[in-house]
Figure 1 (cartoon, one colour):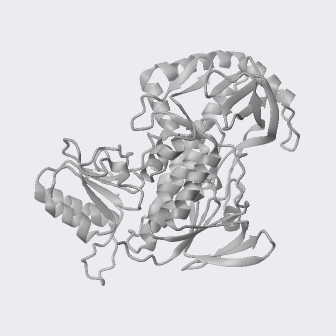
Figure 2 (cartoon, helix red, strand yellow):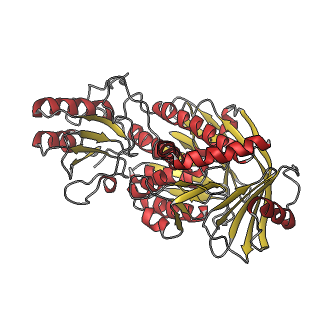
Figure 3 (cartoon, one colour):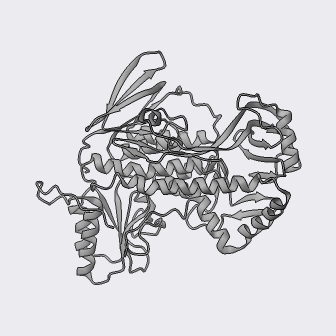
Length: 508
């Protein structure tokens, strides 16, 4: 059993980012509370509907991917513009597609998991300010009825969106700019459903996108260069129909809008994801264009990176550098996503005719030249996200861990992830190595024998990335290397004298 946690975490925001984080912390035995200003009755008028392959792998490790997949439609290719389509069917792993399902379904499965694991979710609770000291954070909370209270936690995570109260309370800058204005959204019925699950198109002055949104509804995103109205201006369905006809060739019989909105899309990112005992994740830390469907996925991957690190710290065995690695690993990913989604947006909305002609050629190359197409699919899906590795490290260090077979139950690697523990996948059955993992680092590491022929031993982090690997075959040298890796990543072994509290330095 893992040691009793020495503190708790308060999460502000019960969107997908906050809910995944809450489930991870609770599954690792850490007390956590989620504050959500929305009432418990969750509406389904949410923007996100794409769950990418890497996010599905993370959900698979947590045992909820199959349930979520059953709620939506699998799309094996993303149509960019015209006849150009990005093939996702060649992606490695169990999920070579993007799942199209409303965000409320993602929130539902994550909420149920978090509650089952023991997390507390308080609805109608709005964080209004915070103060932190050397040992904790006080958060001011206003309840729906008007009462106020102060909650204290060891750590706080702001997952409260683009207008984050937590970020503002920290005085954290959010530099960036608006990249597209007057984007229209609508949920409508269609008399003539598109032939493809996801439909996108652009002309010189118009862009439109249609996706199914459950129960016969469709989400329409439309943009008109000719009419750049303020966010406060109402959206008229005739305007959306006109844009769709210009961009797609048809409005598909749009009717009966139940909800419309107009917004502008920003590209912004905080310089630091951590300020003392307070962390930012998801849209509170970075926001970008909706092109590529990256927002919700990037936030959930932030949560997967942060959760096990907070759990390790509160369970008393984290290396001293571990919490700082959240900034070092996830901030560069945020930069990449901002650049990538911004490039896709500008690609779709170029104005000059000669650039539009070049766009068609570029779209063809991006989807037909295999190395380019593979790189683009890996970036959009999140499969190719990797973290920095120290100089001289094994080639696999920092890379996404494939869901390799392992001997015995449960049969594959990702079924061993999800409870906050590392997995040591060993190439050979060695009792000395098994003792290291299961006894000296008890409660922190699973030990699994690789299910196929390999000479590589790998230590896989709880978020499904490879912390360390080696190809050493000599038993003594392999055991020594494993012992050093476990000490580096998993802290002081259980049988080390308690007065030896020093933590290993981070490899450079």
